[in-house]
Image (cartoon, rainbow, N blue to C red; front, side, top):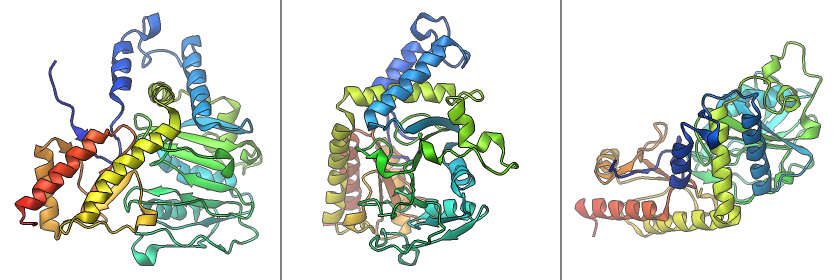
Amino acid sequence: MNYERKYNFSAGPAMMPEAVLEEVAAELLNYRGSGMSVMEMSHRSRVYQTILEETEADLRALLAIPNNYRVLFLQGGGTLQFSMVPMNLMAHGAAEYLLTGAWSQKAMEEAKKFGTVYVPASSQERGYWEIPALENLSLHPESDYVYICENETIHGTCYPSVPDTMGKPLVSDQSSLFLSKPCSVSDYGLIFAGVQKNVGPAGLAIVIIREDLIRGDLPQATPVYLEYATHAGASSLYNTPNCWAIYVCGKVFRYLRSTGGLDAMARRNEEKARVLYDFLDRSSFYSCPVKPPFRSLMNVPFFTPNPELDAQLVAFSQKAGLENLKGHRSVGGLRASLFNAMPLEGVKALVACLEEFAQNCGES
């Protein structure tokens, strides 16, 4: 079949490495001589147990995850973690949430259902287009953890460094930057990520949690499925997991390892983002509202001179084979997501398209 793959700039589900898709396609009907697709086999089978074990081992190798951290593969995506984090970690009924955009705000609103939430820093008054100052945060003694959304997909901001939490566990939603660069896991108490941006198919969240934060004394009314201890005790097999997504994530982990690991991935992502940001900064037609120190390498919001031109540009880009450039409905404009599987050629094609559109609109 002859076809031309499009460049998908969606914030998720996002592009996946073609080499991974080809390998998955080759194994679709008959996984390694088993006579079954991974979508058909029992999660209790030895074949699938091996898939799960290899997937976790490759992730641990990629991130150099310390032995005192557990890796959990959970359903519900990143959004369910907005609830599971406070349900499991609010031992004293309070937490600190740093507000940097829509996703940290959603997580905060969910956390309020389970205890007191403090906000030691926020960029809400500045439209969420920057990361607030992180020096000398005033944290409450009774707070159980500090929560951040490390990369905000809607506003295209990213923490230049993690905050000093003064010994309190740092919880990070890394959904939109997970495995895009090296990460020192020991700096965190818990990391979670919905996988549909950088890693695999939608419907799965990966949780990396320090063992001392896995509590066995949660309130009796806590649903058993929402306890981290349940999944840690069952090695992510308490119930039927998202077997297919785990399998595909494992393919991506091995692909990342075979192409130089996270150091190499970071270099590729930095180059892709530099090509686009350099063009936007040179242009008198386009504008990017995010200040350089806080710019995400994964999600780049930008604007033409008016909303009508924004809409015309979306249509123009689709004709060029560039999909999903429309900005989030809450902020408008345009957004290009440059996740791991987006090739440099895709970013260069985007810049060429933007340049042509601007010239057609009279930019000198």
